[in-house]
Length: 478
Image (cartoon, rainbow, N blue to C red; front, side, top):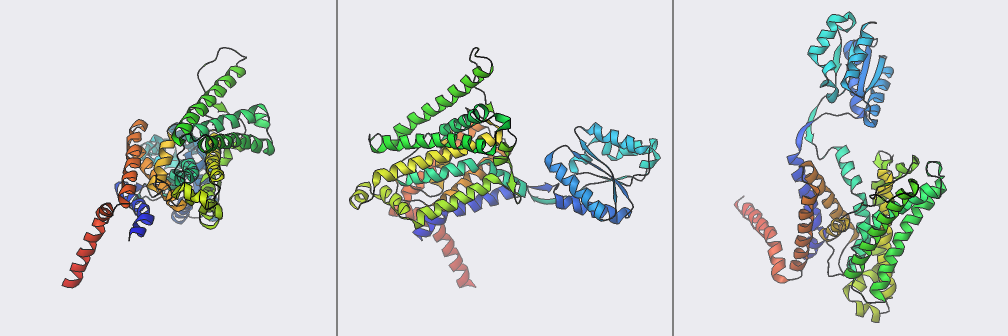
């Protein structure tokens, strides 16, 4: 039972959080998916016949363009006609389209979504007034996909956004897990993320032509940015192992150095662009290359690239930690460093490796951040170390070292992502969220200590024992 609680307690917490946010976000949903658009197109044809004319009115967004294309494609397959497709930047654009079409042949339907039905020109009273001016609009009917009740939290788009926006935290948490298993800590990951993004942006803009950079130039810029952060991690490992400086002190210093370098590079680059004038405030180093943004903003088979990359890295890390000698060495160093050394484990090499890997993952996340925001942000990653450590310890990794699983960290990162999403939906400010994540780290550390004591374990198992007794009592009465 102790082992089950230790290994799967975080999964229970994850499921409970999903259940809670599903209940509190239960509401009416208004779909704008391609499937909803096709279903609405079939309804229009079934109602008005194959020779019906339809005006499609949507917003000028990527999601709405996909929605409109699905409507148009299904109408054409069903024999209907699309009179015009309007990508409205404002509600007045819908009114102009109706007046333009009103002077022609009769219009049977206007296909839009729930947001479109709230626009003035498409409301019943305004449409009736237009019908009084244009006889071809008298039989016009406005259609929108049918709504349904479902938790906003569990919508596919929200779930993808939740895990996409927290992919950088999850990726850094892989390296942090290995560091903490060795009884170390790395406070520099957020600053290294910012440094990587700024260096990547400057390299691409200055050395490889910016908007005209080749694929090789983009890859080289990313490798330089992430590689410098990996070297920063290596330096952390050397200072911890060779100089015997506590990891807290070393990585705290690296945090300040990396953040300062990111700000210095950003300010100097802006000064260079302005002709060497006075230095101003730090600003993001923009990346003009369109293809660069697809690394974080693109998708494959409908799943965002950051999520796919995260899952791949977790799979590789799981194999490393469970099926290779290096993984066993990492656990051994965290369990008892001196015993591991006497057993022939290269302790220094292992420690330098885990800090290097943690820095490399922070650098990779910096590249992802620069791709997502199309520029290197010197202030990116602030307090990321807090969220990353929270993900690792909530996932079951012991701060004392020697215990932890990659799968647990993945679940922990999911818990942090869900909590942050819920706090954002409730309008909780960023500085207020710091209290929550700090409390999570403290609570997880307390649970870790309780699991190591007999009385603590009994206390943690108390709810399970009470539930078992209740069920046994009901069975006997039955």
